Image (tube, rainbow, N blue to C red; front, side):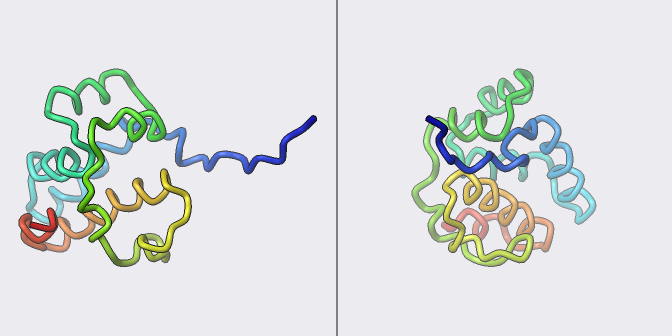
Length: 121
C-alpha cells in the first residue's frame, strides 16, 4: 500500500549551519550584530548559546533544528507579515511556519526595528 504523502520541502533538509552565516551577513550589512541574531534565534527556539552552537556543530538540518528546539516561544504567534511573498500567519505547514517566523524576525532586525519590538516584548 502506497501512501500519498506530500514530499518534504527541500528547505527542510537545508543545514542550519549553512543558513546561519547568511542571517548574520544580512544583519551585519545593516549594522546589526551576530549577538542580536543569536538573541532572536534563542528567543524563538528556546536554545541557549551552547545549544545553538551544538546545533551548528552537529550540522543538523532545519527539520531537526526545530524538532529539537527546547521551547518554541508561545509569543511567536504575534509574528505577522510577509516573507517570500507569503503571510507567515497563514502558512499551514508548522515547520515551514517556524522557518518563516525566523526569516521574518531576521528581516525585521535588518530593517532596523528595535530588538525589544522584534522580540514582541
